[in-house]
Image (cartoon, rainbow, N blue to C red):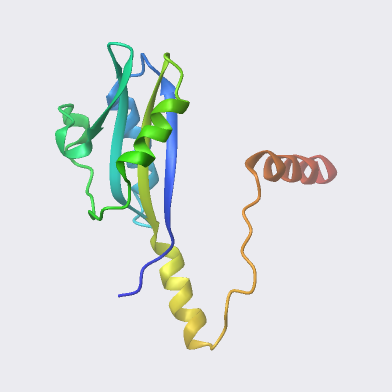
Length: 139
């Protein structure tokens, strides 16, 4: 089976956010199976240091129903880099996800002998501005 693009995402939250709320966010992202969760590491503050906690070691039952398709994508260096970027009042969820929808599209593209000639990601603020401008014109 071909795979979709794999992406690392770092979601940050105020440090007083309940880990159950973090689980809710991840669950919402993966609910439709368009995105598969490959890895999840929480970075939490402990004695002034960011400590990495793998999903398998998270004791909060809110994470129990999150399914992983494990693969080693994140390195210790990756997590150290994220930890260094966090402020003392933040916690982070470092996710590795696969975009399954893209694998299906790629298969169809291959069958049609097509190729992806260009792939760009539009920054969220630019996309929001474009939608807002369209709504104002039509509205």
